[in-house]
Image 1 (cartoon, rainbow, N blue to C red):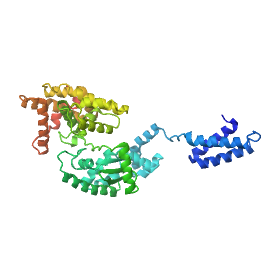
Image 2 (cartoon, one colour):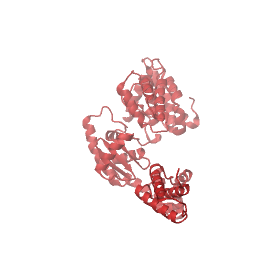
Image 3 (cartoon, helix red, strand yellow):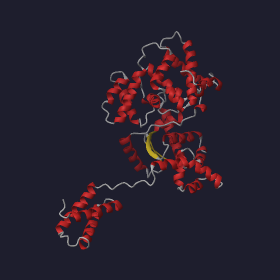
Image 4 (tube, one colour):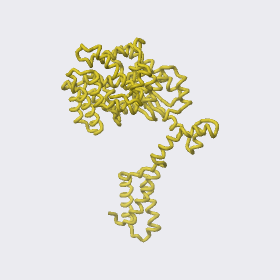
Length: 448
């Protein structure tokens, strides 16, 4: 305890105010404390009996403790979370009002109506997919470069930065896959890397907010800010990969009505889950993505891919679910441990009857009982819900009748579905019409 509590408290409060205003600088704070205490001893503290030695000790104590232990309170946000959300929701309406009231729908006019800055309104509009000038620039790009821009928009929906693997990005651009296909030749990968660098330069020069730098086998991506130079970028990429790993690529979503029957994302994920139920063996972590998508986890699942890779490479017991469950016990992060246990449990439950002969429709229903994908599709993707209903009621029934004498009927049906997808691409298989899908739409409540 200080020999003079009044002098100590006066100096402490002055030190706090100084740090809050000017930051933590030990020498400047010490000089400020000397000046404050000298003024206090000449004014309000005159007659306090504080000696020079005591004053020096108080100054040393206060300045040292403030630098080492004091954390200035964070500045409160000017707007609450609810106010910021309301401003984001109101941005499109401001754009419409600008067209009606001021004659032209521009960001400047919308910002003036809402009393906000142009940058804020433009960001809110862009986050909701409204950026006419930017979209015009993207549409003017060559088709493959435009597809790359759409991939980057899906992977980085907001301003941010991260590292992507160059081969994964190339696979997304050319194969529309989040991982290189195993049959891709080495010469093909080398050619794609070279061509991809040209596409990255085109994106940089397009003025759409992305700044990309290829560094070895990775691509550094920033949305909203520039990199300072190649040397600093390489150092940043190494630090980022060591601390956080790399980001998984997200392919742009295509509305089900615009894609072919067998390319429907929900149908492809369900087929992948049915394959897992019959053959729960993996050679690539990307094979587990459909399971994660249907699980709809609410947090970042990228660290799980590293765990999947470890289990695949080690293959300790030969059962992926058991090996993953064993590895999950050593994970410290509770969210990742919980997600790993989920995946392990999902695979275990899906493959519970893999050694039994099941009718394909029964296998579909059992997978749905565990993953609940039909309810999810009904709420989030009505068009996909209708296709899944048609697939279950018509396609699975027809294929099971054709392959009735085959062993492991479910697996044979899945192989036939692959062939039908190829036939659809060649125009040899006709997808169901709107009238054929109508009985399975949400409003008609199909019976499953």
